[in-house]
Length: 84
Picture 1 (cartoon, one colour):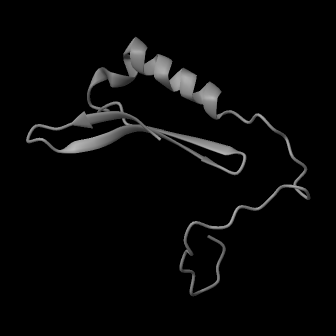
Picture 2 (cartoon, one colour; picture 1 turned 90 degrees about the vertical axis):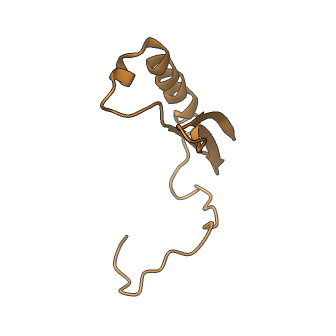
């Protein structure tokens, strides 16, 4: 789900906040700005990060032997069969 969009001079659009849910897991992606600016001191940015952390936290505890596996979205090449 796309939550926020930003843009750059010249008109390029970039996804700035997105969420995904897969199985019992949740993921929040956030790109509030470049680290060379005081972005992470902004109270609104800090509030978004705090809210996202609460939203993504584990809500269910499942025994590993009973945890459902979700089918991979796409195969990851691993010709050497090493642990990824």
